[in-house]
Image (tube, rainbow, N blue to C red; front, side):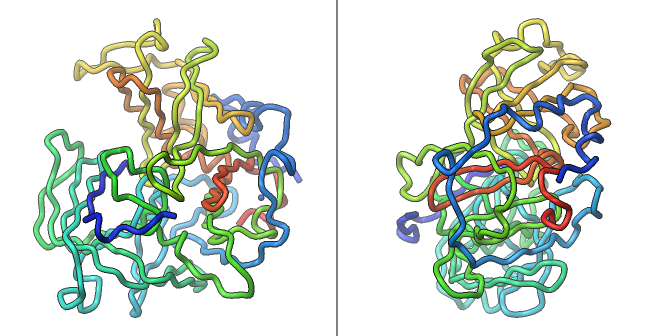
Length: 380
């Protein structure tokens, strides 16, 4: 989910992986060759090596699809504060754990600071208190990993933005449960959405040696910590740009977007967001040419049959066709914005039906591995 976050600055710290037939299923309405991207593979000088890294844990999602099935809903993990785990939504479109205050034991007696987070895709404003506590994350098979104490937003109240798409004001909500694991979110009106709130970057998998901070996200679960084992396969990497104002954080994934084959397209940033099933697309009108129509609400929309191609440097690319919902990569819908100057796409979660993705928080790399590029045993 897109997110805006505010937290008192005094609490901020220096933020400082054998082919199989599954890809054939994706071919209707998609350029399968585009799934694999350009011919050049990342090698040692193009991307990082994880040969010496050993500390990591795999957490299967509580609602993971069965092998061979597509991911169609936002993934869940278990979260506990020392007691029984309860489900939370895993959201790469935000950063930080956001839960109902009642889920944190003795929350009223713990040191806290006022805080709020706005999820701009829905318009919900989560208002509460930042409380620094350790947490435990749980997978479906009982595997778990603990974190160091991190700021967690204990939500006392939900308010709504003026342009909220899906929001109901509420006092003392009991249903708030978000696990934000994204990066580079500070510039979306969320200056405090920093790496110190990211549970996966503050996790402590068991084992000797240092941990390589980052994760591998698949349709069925998440590998916490980057290791030689969980980074196997034909990964191709995009080098991320350092955040200019937040040490230790990185800007969004570079992307170039073309419409109906018009090249070179418009280049900007991408957010691969597990928190939403729709796609949010920002392009200037000049890039859309004759591909626009006005929908029933008077808003600009893409004509059915319009082809959108997303290219992530030399690492990966894929194509979707507007109105074609028969394939795993197709979003439920596309929300179009033609007024903002900077090209942007929030792909939604369906991109995980085409790729496993890797985020290296220490060295600033984002990796793509086409689904089917490794044996089934290596695709948890």
